[in-house]
Length: 381
Image (cartoon, rainbow, N blue to C red; front, top):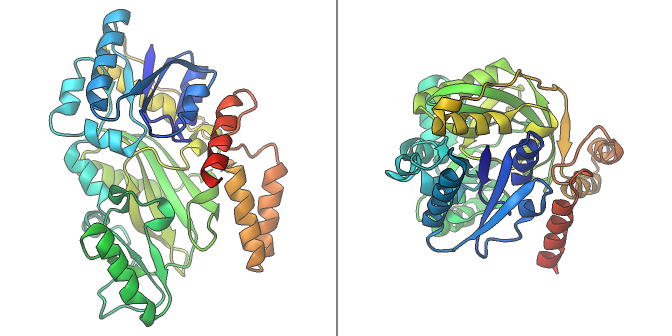
């Protein structure tokens, strides 16, 4: 059995590679020319590496799938890690064409575009009765507020650049102007929610959730509001119900993470959906949530219905943490500079606790981490 894993310069690809490689799946890593250090290709579980041309990458990927299917007598499972690759595969007729040479669990273009659009997600939330942050117009805004584009990733914005917290009226015009200049459309303005971040991640097929896990954000970097540097797995029936409703309504297939934030009373409000592999995906490996196998299994079964693979038992370890050591160390110092001693001490404790795994480093497979940290140093140098 072969899995073709794309966009292996992303650190979250390592969790997929390691999970499936340890199960005996043959791993073929693919990266686009010039996309970045293909850290996943340095894993001991990587059996084969292909650098795809910058232009025509999808055609080259199709040819690779066809060659492997012909050589092995069974179709590989194609697992698209990057958002750009997933969007290309979801294009009109592309997924159907690939079904001749690969097993592919892929959302429709309509579902992908809908869940990538924060305004469309808010409309779905209202329809489905999912609590949302209050939306403002420039004339009705109350401060502090949050400003964000409808789909920041589409314009190449990093996670920390996809929103701005505005604390006073005089700051708002410049922020609105900046986002509109970047995206060509007015951004969204929402109430600021003071509580912690939570998420519900799922593997789904044709609107049905096959596997789910929730998490809470323990620490983030930058501490003013950024991606998780440490998170913790848990069960939350309410969040799982909200995620299942969104998946069913859009007939979604693939992986997605539904993001929530708690309001002042501790109630979750729907923020957005990441309909792809998300940044804290390595938590699914740390917590034994079985996401990589379920993704592979459903993809494989689509391509090889005569050799169906069965699901694993749910072995989720609730309470399990995962952290990105460098980001979490920076987060701890950031909290300390703000006088917040408890999260600083928490970061220090988790850094030396062997029960809290890192999302990149694995002593059984160290080379990708060395390449990843080396590439970070080069970029900052």
